[in-house]
Length: 241
Image (cartoon, rainbow, N blue to C red; front, side, top):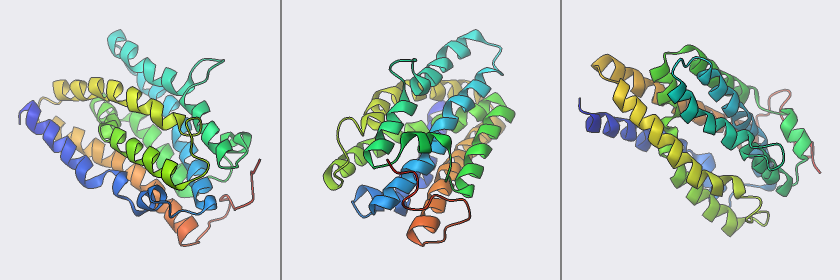
């Protein structure tokens, strides 16, 4: 396969499997979620957001090449930010506060669904243990993220009173951060997936990551749309400001 064919194959995975197609996102973006369903999404998505810099730090600890580390460390800086201004994590907590949640409660990780926790931990473990090619390829869901962020900003502003420039600042910032990150990651994968076996490994890694994202939304749907709340899950009224 040529580089172009491999990239097309990766993009086809996103077209078929990215979580923008999950019914929970359609419900959220169209204004169909109740306030508590929005809160449940914010709480559970925090588990994933908080794990991203830890996942990236685990990846960097395995890289002998300082060029890779120099490129990759901006991902940690994007999420952790500085002491004063914070980063993506602090912007996510602004969203939590806007929907009526106590940011300290959200940051504590209490109330996260067991399936969400398992999916996120599986992703961190995958990046820590798998060959570097698969670790990098698993990050390529960012190829498809700008579209979902654009749709989310438009939908939330249209349908929810909490939505404004401050509460949605996480998504607006990712419109400029994600393309820069994924350009490097995609080039790295195309450069290093130089055998049919490695091409299959890269595609399998991207499929795994889409499964991680999809599983989190399945858990949200089962708990807060169908009403099957597992023990320890957030319950409406808990952790409010």
